[in-house]
Length: 349
Image (cartoon, rainbow, N blue to C red; front, side, top):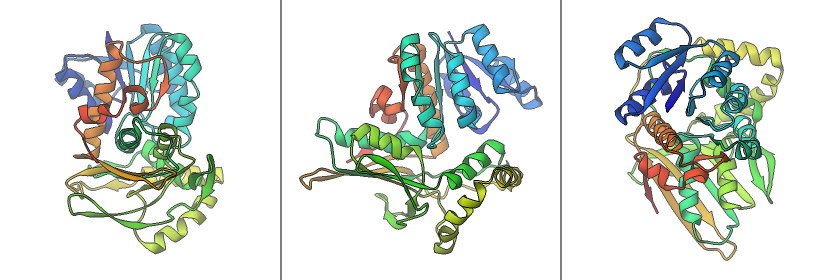
């Protein structure tokens, strides 16, 4: 049974392929015809499927019926639903989406996937799982809490090269979405970059976190059932001045011509290699119950992209073994909080 890695020469693809091969999985590299794809195939011995659009990849999936598809190509709001449906019936799918557009769309396929005997997992990486696993561990065996707060503090090494259209689109779409949080059980508008604070990390380091519209928010609410949920991240600008202009920038970028222009400009930015800013990446959650009881927990892992690759490989291997339950899920909802520890994280509570 083969596991297809879409976008195999991208950053996540290049990280996850060797992990799968070390586990003895049968891997197929999927991507555009390129020297990098040929080099990767030659060095790994993996078979190649060349396809340069979402529609052509979906057609290849329907024709060859791989056991599992790992989607690392980004642009999940546009690609995930098409590619996941191509895996039905019987095939399984996972991606690393972490935004409030793509993740709900994938989860909306739950009944369709269940009827087809397929498992779809979205958010299979540091984004989503790092905080979802902590919330699940803190809430296990306890009544529904009143309030949950989660903080994602990823430590990522920067690579040389262009930012790329997929990541650029994700960044711009965060600004366009604006702040979001759950109040009284409903998803409501808030101010992006709000409630900035200095978070003291368990290893003595610090990180500034503030509100952002991420799928960590959705996963925390679904996992806990809490009516009030707040999600923050260290990926937002740290300065007060920068956070102040974010809502204004988001409103401007809702104009589609400006959005497309901004994505093109940002995609062309060339980054310089830099080490990760902190030794550890952290997922953090504080859960409060109606009686005032509060529990706090952390997930500690290393470089966030390495953790993402380990999560994707572990989920794919479990799906290939038939361990997934039919339907569409976030990662801890599919496999429990122990998924994070199996992928190399440590839960501290």
